[in-house]
Amino acid sequence: EDIILCGSEHAAVAYKKIVDINAKNIATFGIKKDFKPLNRSLCREELQLSKEKKIMLYTGRFMNDKGLETLLAIYSSLLKQKQNVQLIISTSHIDPNYYNTLAHSTKDVIIFYRLERDKLVKLYNAADIYISCALSIFETYGKSPLESIACGTPVVVPAWDGFPYYITPERGYLVK
Image (tube, rainbow, N blue to C red; front, side, top):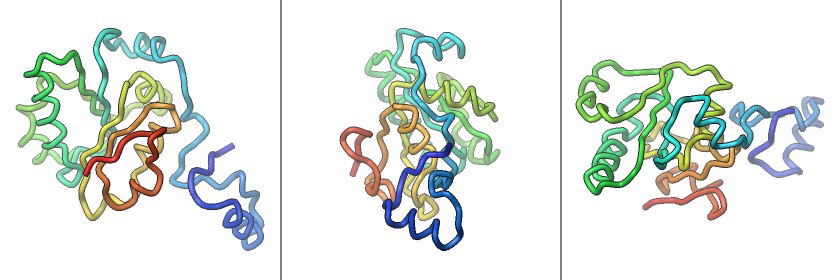
């Protein structure tokens, strides 16, 4: 079954009455049941990721509206401070010009391109934290942070647009 991540129970009942669909089968943003907590150590082992480093994860488009220059600058700063971290980016859409502009900042970054869903779920589970720096008018709610939360991995996102509606202290942290 799909997971209902937002909306009230009353809204789901009303929706069911309107279209005669079992509300349990409504999946907001397409977050499927395969996004669930798994064993972190096993996921890291299967993906051949470090067991010692703290893994910071970003999944989504590699485009200029996602604030990746900010994320890469944060990562670079952490490395300069000798923090034991690894940034991983998983994407299925890359703006070539934007990537070329930032390529020099990605030499210590692991980038996955077009991961199969089961591997993406393992990647969310392998991570210690999911991070987004998106401040675009196109960032309305964020499917990736919801997938991360469904896997039990906390998120750090801007206090921007739709994020404050579902980020709680149990799920992650909003940054001003």
